[in-house]
Image (tube, rainbow, N blue to C red; front, side, top):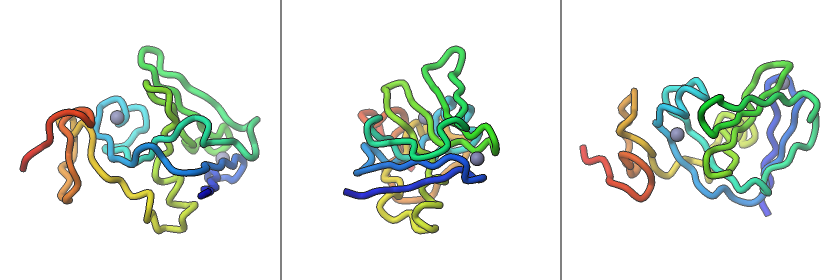
Amino acid sequence: MNLYRMRCDCESVSLMAEGAPVAKAYCHCTDCRDFYSTPVLAATAWQKTSLSVTGGRESIGEHTHPHKQLTKYFCVRCGDTLFGSNRIGMYVIPNKQLWRTLEGALGSMRPEFHLFYRQRVVDIDDNLPKYLDGRTGELFVA
Ligand SMILES: [Zn+2]
Ligand SMILES: [Zn+2]
């Protein structure tokens, strides 16, 4: 079983993910961009049972979007976003968290496709599949 240990910037909170993510992707949707304050969200999605808080639970703050089914969890001391939960009940771990764990080598956590590419604000020049909307829909053709 693979274990991935993560900590926030100030190291008050520590987390552990076990096993493997359900999906590894770049998401270009407006919701992710706004909620995670990034032009593209590089992240992995996990079953809720795969993620546990191993320290500093009292320092975790939580914000649920007033209109969307999105919640994010952050460190109240340093403000670092730890993970979020999405509409389909999975936890979303931004790759910046895993990056620290994996010491700069994303390796097996590297995104495998792009989602909601139609909503992008930056063009990406790579060879990964780019779904214009969700993963079952149409692909972008350059
Ligand atoms: Zn912190
Ligand atoms: Zn998204």
